[in-house]
Length: 169
Image 1 (spheres, rainbow, N blue to C red):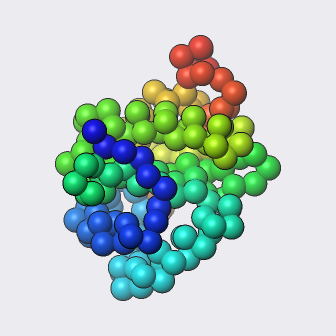
Image 2: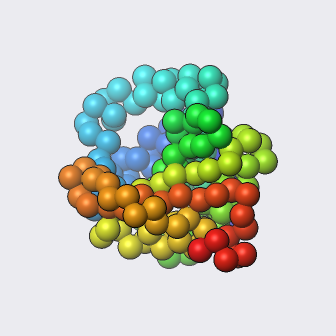
């Protein structure tokens, strides 16, 4: 069973492999990280770990028992009890409910471990999979239209004090 782990320096090889193997797949639904991300991967990872240590972001990886990264689940721009959620799942790990289960687990962690009360997210209108995950995890559309790499999208919000099964949808 895959496990959600906080980003650590020793994740570097598996994380880079995940990003490289799925780059083309990700580009069909989420903004591409660009060539510089891969060229400067070590510096990028160091910067993320520094942000995490400062408490302004929390980065997580969904890792299978063999150490392979199946997904990234990040809480960024933490301020005033809220954060932005971003996630991406490997193509081979889709359609198994892993993204929804992991986002639900991360919502619990955000409230209980990180003291957050609200999460925000955004998804492109044509990214049905991410929009479905957000809805199943109790996020509701804000009505805010956003642009994601030039593509139209919607903003979402999740009140962490409410169980997604209690009618928060």
